[in-house]
Image (cartoon, rainbow, N blue to C red; front, side, top):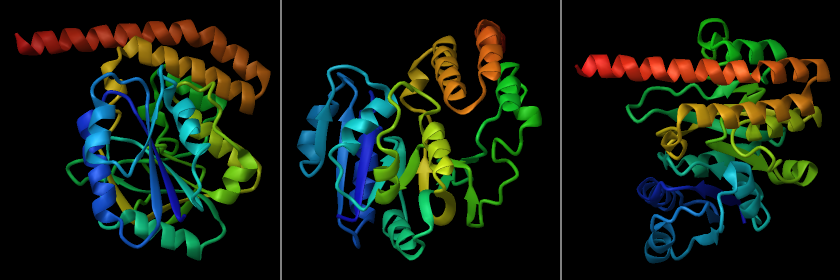
Length: 285
């Protein structure tokens, strides 16, 4: 088996349907298998899969396991030489999976890979990051990242060129089998956010390279599942995962400082979301 595709889905039935359709239409030159992990959507996703995609392996969870927990359920059954974590709000175009498998076969030095992600209008989606440092976490708490963290956010990356990077976005996250056998499953204590960041950091610590390549292109609609949650709830999950990441990959002094600042981070998020709502109301009036 060349490629195992693992898709974790939660209440995005129509986007998932389009994603799967694009996979089967745009992939002809490799042997692949698809696992869809449904995180207790309750929206007819299972029935849709059974009707339209009988070739897909359905893994139905009785509760929402989050991204990493869902991925692990698929990874445990995957048999491919490459493992692809793919978001359900993506669309495969121009034989992207054929191309990236062939490219990885030619470049054995690549352990992890990400492709060129496009927004629905065809513009480039910034999908490369550096691994976050303590200073980066501080900037994010005070919402300064869009002003002073261009390198971290991938705004200075030339997305037309292939290059070694520290991390690629988890919406299209390819893992070579040898890397998976060395690192094992994802850390499912990251319910949301920082799961692929942690995996990238672990890979780097073991000497594996992460590559961004524009040879394959995929449309990514972006954060479809979690748009359904409130801003404060999102920040809570983000803060919990950030603290776990710091505990694993930073010194304990940094962890304590960020822990103490976490309530402030939640307060800033609440105020920010209220201001945005008020501005929208005033604009409507």
